[in-house]
Length: 480
Image: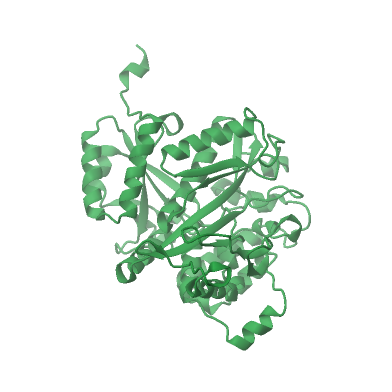
């Protein structure tokens, strides 16, 4: 008997998937009561017999994406007590207090394309709680969602974000993990910026990834090859900040899955190959209230409001302190190289793309701040939490100090050791992250740095790839 006739698992056409996921996304944007959405999702899962499993996902302190599959019937009966071993997650609990809990954020629910993720499965974002059932301090998705929720409830403020995530395609499966053996990456295409041919393998990858992302409701705007060989960028529209961060994780997951199905590797290392442009994640941010863009002022400098200019000034003042959360790997500091359009200057500009902040030409709807110094391997929740809190609450310089700093060009750290030192000694970062969480993060970054040559040099070293937080696993980490 054909096994396919024995399995009646859910498979939804892409156009219907897009409608369903966009409707769920709109419920989040409209701030529909999460309890009501939980009831709807639980009823749907109970009634839909063709769903076999639910993938619950979360991100660790460094931003690595983790997924656990639960049998549907088990999850519906036990979603108030989903435990996992936190000591197996770097940056989470110690082995003596290993049990952590997952809570389900039911509004963050996605129906999945069956041909990519398998039939009969859906995915939902979870958040981590400690043994006392309180939100876990190292889970920055929970902290970001809590903070923006308070902003909305108290002042009606909504933060929007739109990331521009670049990646590279390499020949072979698991090319990053095999770098310790090969010492090199092989580009799978030499097509260039905007002009890769329609049936080029790079374009085929982009087309497939874009189809899946549209089906997930990411609201794609454009997709194209980028400057470096085998480089791609798929842009999706701006949305509320927690949704945007979730979409970053889904974007990277989708690209990796599509690439693997083609016998390739999608890499989001910031600078995996010397001598060509690296991968960035420019992050566009704006703030609104009652549908009005608070960053826009038709009469302001660069058409920015005072709120937006103050936001920029606070970021610039603390730029060196927060650099580690925006560029969190050894490899990220290769990208901050001025010879490759690197945004390493601590200043804002409407025209200079070497500035860490760009003020795009915009109208009332599109006025925003573009943070160009963000690497694609950062924890998106931690990054957005840091930018939001720093821009709204961070320290500012007195006018005399500001004038002195403007008289010279300042630069971001050019290596992770300096970035660690600046973050570690920053009183502001300790207060922002909390001393315990800040210490954990510094410890993780120091351990990663110590496994790599201190001087970057002109060659990409095996250590900075092998021990990268998105690449390494327990086996690789123990090989030191």
